[in-house]
Image 1 (cartoon, rainbow, N blue to C red):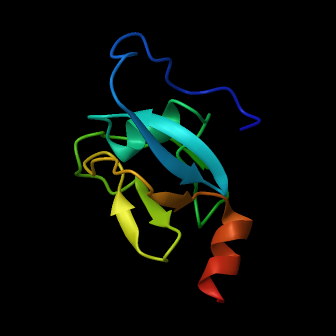
Image 2 (tube, one colour):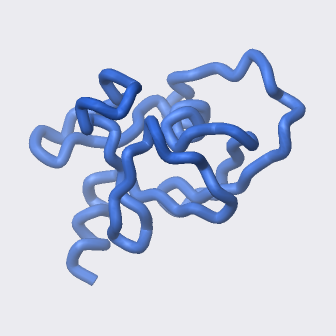
Image 3 (cartoon, rainbow, N blue to C red):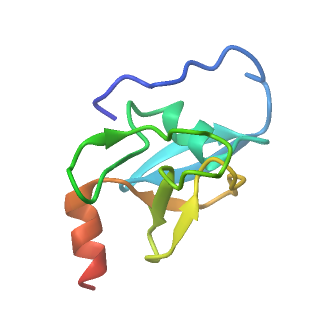
Length: 104
């Protein structure tokens, strides 16, 4: 990604890698990561607001506010702060890419 990561991993560096795709780019999280942790470990934002276009990084981080919803490549949405990262997950967090996925 062109942006610096929001999170910097300081521990669990030797955990099993978990591959996922973010806006078409293959990335790697770690076993035990939530979707939010995995994305913010490689990106400066979790998603763009569909209303304002502003970058978002989650808010409450406990599953209450719904600010962390991200779109899967299949069009469904998951709450990133409480969803475990699974191998092969594919996320679309760029507004232009989301619009394209919605019209397919």
